[in-house]
Length: 134
Ligand SMILES: [Zn+2]
Image (cartoon, protein in one colour):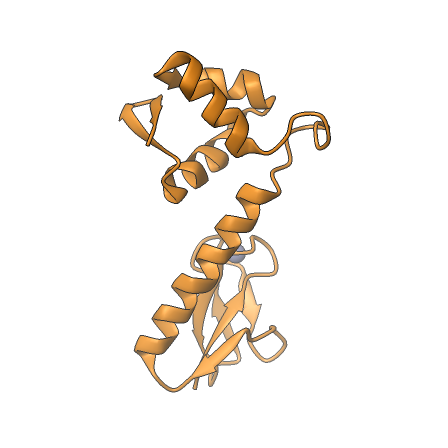
C-alpha cells in the first residue's frame, strides 16, 4: 500500500510505501515516521499515487499564492496576484527587484513566491530575473 504524506519539517508532499516504518523526506532528508504520519490518500497503484501527489502538491502551491506572508503587510496590500498584475500592466517587463519592493519580501521567501507565480502561469520569465505577465 502506498500513501501520500507531508513532511512535518518542510511540508513537502510526497508518496511513501506505507509498509516501511520510516522514509527520508525527498527534499530535506528528515526521517519521517510513516506509522505516525497523516496519510492524505492511500492506494495500491503507483500511478494513482503519483497523480495524488501532484494534485496535493498543486493545491498546496495554490494556497501559498492565496495566503502569502509578506512581512507584516497582510491587510493593506491586497492579494499578490493583483499587485503583480498591476506591476505588469504599468511596466511591461518587471524584475525580481520590482517584485521585492512592491511585495516587501526578499531572499528565500521572494524566490519561493516567484517560483509559485511562474508555476500558476500568471507570469513568465523573459530572461533570468525579468518577468512579464502571461
Ligand atoms: Zn522535508
